[in-house]
Length: 70
Image (cartoon, rainbow, N blue to C red; front, side, top):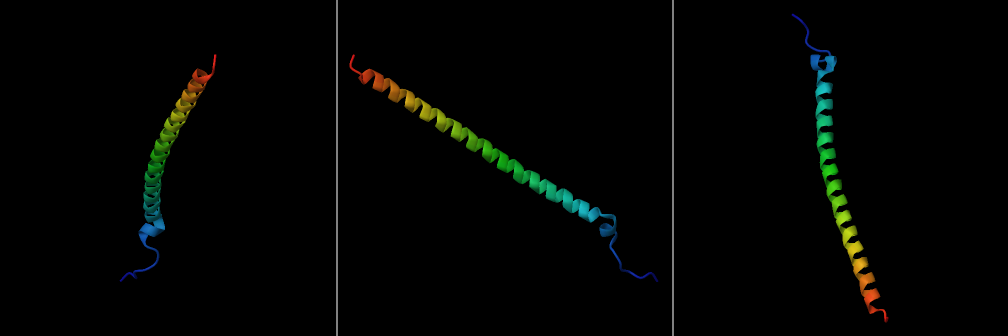
């Protein structure tokens, strides 16, 4: 009768560790993708706000020029 014990085959061959590593990489990539999408959204919001501020400055300049006596 053979004695059971020692290192399980999955641990000895590294297949369990490999599966865990693949799962960890998959989760990391999913989180990174979500973070990238959020950063793109925030970048678009910042660009839009910058454009609004630029238009506001142009309007102020036009109003100031029109108000000048001349």
